[in-house]
Amino acid sequence: MSNNYTNESESGASNHSSSAVSRREARANSSTGALPSLGTLGIERSPQPGTSDFEQMVQSLKELFEHDRQIASQSDATRCGICYLHFHVNELHYREEGFYVCSNCGQHLGQQHVSMLRKQQKL
Image (cartoon, rainbow, N blue to C red; front, top):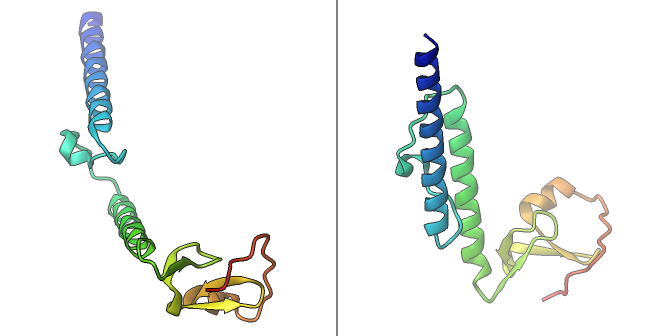
């Protein structure tokens, strides 16, 4: 009985080690530094409650940052001083405190005064 336990333990350790190696190799081969999806590594996961919510959140963040990079690459873009995402200058409002604010952050701030350590240059 102890031999079976040892063999199962050893095979489990070797499986863990090989999956860790394949993840490291995939990471090393990636030019962007981003990890590939788990499905491309042959790693199967058991479904867990809430996993799809997490995956949806990660996907929406990925899309948000891709859009931000796309806007940032344009010459008429600058950052919102609150959320720090890029917008076209005509989509932002310059506040007297010395920073641009997007409409969403502007609605949340309302008339509240915000002191900034570093002011943005008005374009």
